[in-house]
Image (cartoon, rainbow, N blue to C red):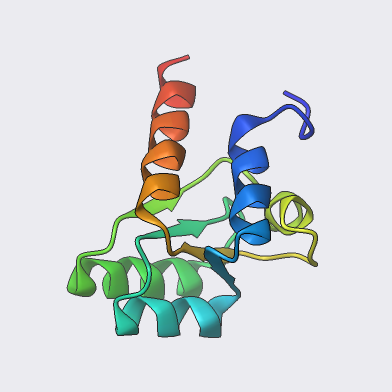
Length: 108
């Protein structure tokens, strides 16, 4: 699926434009700890250390986490940024839409 037509990546762009996303490990960690994060997204090529750190933190703070089938470069490009392995979505409505899109991708 091309990135321009990929609904998940398009939604990430909307998150960025509407300022409902934190990008990068430090900002994501802060959003999780503060309760601002509604969802954490990890790229498929995030390091094992980053994966463990965010799975543990999200479990502790009861924040949903998605391991998505996109690389750091794809996530960054969708946001108009450099590579990003970790994103925190801060809007519940956008979170629900993203979870539905990933669930539908898994059904295919």
